[in-house]
Image (cartoon, rainbow over all chains, first blue to last red; front, side, top):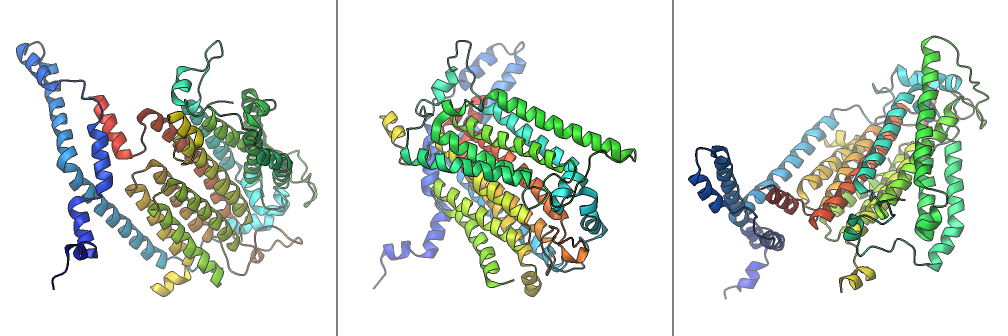
Length: 339
Length: 88
Length: 124
């Protein structure tokens, strides 16, 4: 007996054939629907062409523009009906081939790399030997990585704090919604957020109860990690992220009114400015003293104590404050468009 | 190079494939949080506790919170009762 | 060659993840999934970098009991590089998500092909 058509339709060969000829049906139809529904183009091409035909010597330039727009219109029409499917199919195939080829080439390179965990790798050269042997004496930090990024390579950390500051500025430009002089929000706020006006919390008992218990613990833990950056794993960045997590929990549970009591725009501006300036000035002093061969006047202390390792603890505090403020302002800008 | 280490590395590849192949946007976001957490554990296997703390706090914490707030802004979280009422 | 790849297992997995993240970035149409693909590429490269610093048998670079020989600790330099990279990655993700929110407000969709066509239709 012959098989039914539905038996054939569900087989893998039929599926591949259907994909090849018709594409991802649902998505293509959805896109075609979205494209065909917007309003008709504002520019009437045939009329513009006739008008240019009538005044051809004085309007030569505009005539050429009108012809170019007619071509674009024809291109759009072709893309909607037939070109789209062929191009998107070709694009998918090429992207998969490119990804696979890149993976294969990189795997060949990995096979030629030095063995994992080999003590004689070329990466473990005299630079890291110097950092490990003399790190404790010259920087006073028990955590060699923290001593490295805040003393030997402090310039990289300054660049990274600058990148964080630039990112905060860019997100401020993109997402802040200004108020005009009477304090009313701008038109954008009303238009864009018409169904997201619930910035204030709904007085959720569970959330507020757990935030009352958890926020002091999280803030204390974050401050501990920042202060102990030179003695144990951690440092400015992770401590700052944890402090900002505690502040965001407080903001989510209790609302913008209560959080605005201690964290305003002025707080963010002055804290970021002072932290970054302090970092730059401290490192400028260290560079100046080091370049002229003078010993820096800051004592190193005994390794293992909190107040040791010279400038590393104040720098950790500065970096931690910048990171905490930046992450908090990211969240507030996304949520409300301001503080 | 014990079995747990190899299993975690395999889970990384499975998580990154799952991000691409699920339909729901919220699901792929939660799988990304799990990916970040597994990466933080693998840093510990490579004897770098600084990186583990930073990746756990930043990757599975701050980046995921920002993604969730973005999803809220683009109304991609289903079951939001105010949104459905406002649309009526 | 498979034996060589198995010995460098972290680097192999990191390269595979880089390829997967790159393909997600190229093929997915949703903007949020593209950003997740970019983050996967970033963390794959950090895994590659940090695995260059590991030396078997030695401990994390925190001085214990005043022992400061080279033969007792792993290489600390790649850890410093990756720490900078993680912070740059999170700030970049923040900017991209802000751009996504603005694009959604303007075009009411997240599909990159539809946005490109609508933007081109406006310019004409």
